[in-house]
Image (cartoon, rainbow, N blue to C red; front, side, top):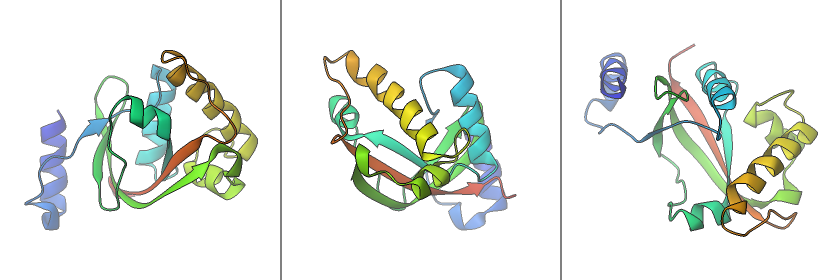
Length: 151
């Protein structure tokens, strides 16, 4: 499924014909949110995601980098979009702005919504490791562009 989605993309965007299939993933830790986020990315509404730096370190995941590509799937692994990272910055939880929350595109796109759902998510993510989120926790803000499907 992923390979055929990537091949279709390469046929439509020949400048990527020599590029290997990028990693695929879904957002969030539950089906409802994962499917909603995949839809928002495919519609170019969601154009950022926010990793907790402690979460990346615990899972030994590399920091995102400009130019990284990914295939965004729904909860069941069905590909929905291809993204390309355009900017990465490290920001403390307390310093996330309303503008950034809007770019992330979830819920009503407000800062208060962003703070609530992300605090809850980071609490779940870190609790298995005996950690808790804090206002000073560093986050990795990954801005991306949806390059497929074209809207």
